[in-house]
Length: 176
Image 1: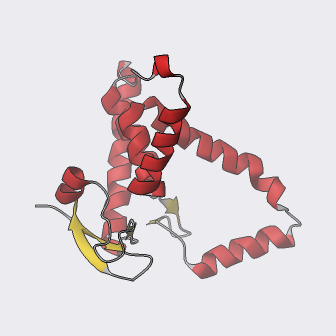
Image 2: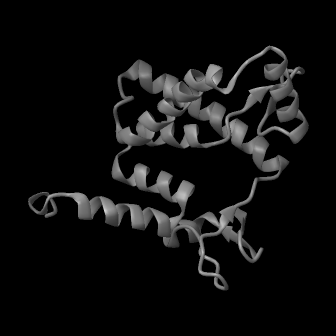
């Protein structure tokens, strides 16, 4: 049984339900009408709960792997990268996890930072540290994890263009 997720074309609005099995075989979907990469739509509440539970299980596995000295294995690196790319659950006031935030919650946090006199530069280091930890895990996962991450963020076509540019910029003797 494959869980299906909704993908939507940013240009024409076409929506498709696509299962993980299909994604594993074909990669990210491209709109049949516009020939552009489709965007993954946010998961529903049930999927958010499942994601939070899977992240908790993943953390337990990583803790175990760290005690066994196996955290260097590719499977643990892959698990770390997958967990970092997943929506990170946060604790609500009642102790239950939340995934994602509403516009009102984001606005409240922005207002709080603004009222405290914070400037964008004040959060730079926090953002860089968070992003760097994700990037390190992805980079440690090798080409497969790196390319999957780039495709998730930029789409297949843009990733391929970037790879072509990178390959073209390599000296000829290194391109073999």
